[in-house]
Length: 471
Image (cartoon, rainbow, N blue to C red):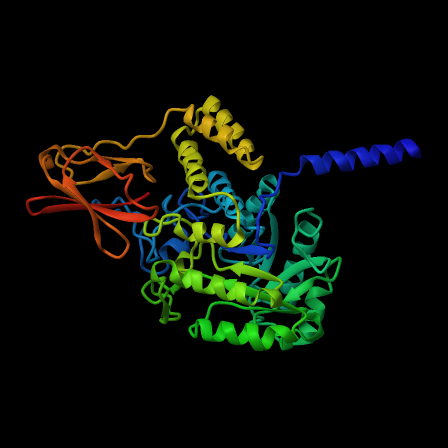
């Protein structure tokens, strides 16, 4: 018996030692990231087409703007890595490393269960993401979308899937000693009796949170509520934190960068109100408000990492660069900066550049493990030991501007058609202010620019080419 006990103890100790180290933070508040697993490319979809969340009803990502290289997507903002597939392991690796080095504690995955249309793909994508959260040392939980369950039996089956496949994972998020489950509503099943049945299939009762002001629909099954994005902005959030949260058993806060939906323009209908990003001020205000009422909040949910359709993304974009995640770093109080975020991006670009190169991929696997272990210098050394991607020079007669590297450090290289040699360069910041001007030259010294996203305009005569870059 003693030998068995010792063996059990050693196995538990080995498991504990194998856990990736957590990022040190000065802010004790739990911070979770709302995550959408719904993007498809022609290589991953079941119909060999771009997924609905890149196209909506009227956008075609196969159309590429020759001046910027951007595909036509159903969003006002463009991912730094371009439109992607949620099941792509390189994308998942990149996303999770960004979150780890931003000080995020876990992801709350928008969960649709199984069913018709694209739901099986969303479930596949979720199941590609879930095991990787443990690989990087992050927790995960689900935000159940009840309106997509056709019947009560379907809702129960979807919840049973969560209990069977996710609750047993060591890194499933816990709150008050119970698994954390949110629902984005309820929107379809709106009686306590419904939720008694739906949650009754779980192996253990969860900490169950409906949306703010919706807990009555779940009755005693609800442990509290979580707040979300709404058109009244800080007014509604302040009212919830000040007047509603103190009376709840559990209260979830929210912080977000803005709201700028593409749904109406994309032919899907939906809200037309806008909360501007305001050069990062919207995110700052919602984070500051969460800090003000921190004692009343059990966690803060960042909304969202990648809902491009609603323009609420904190994922790096060509328009904003890494700025949103830099604000999250300041909020969580990690010792890391944009430099580590850029290294995660470099890892992603090298994964794609060296696709099919077994030796290079093995080196990148080692770099990933060093990132997970928080050994940033070793990870950077491994990345820089490999050949780096360079842009293809524009073909003769092609009026296209390309910038490299992007993101850039101290020097930015320009590639433009030979016939435009001798032009002028202007660099504009996010407000449109010209911050740098020089005669056309194949390289540009940008050491004097602050970190952020800029637009470079190269002009000669009546020809003007522009491209965004991140410093």
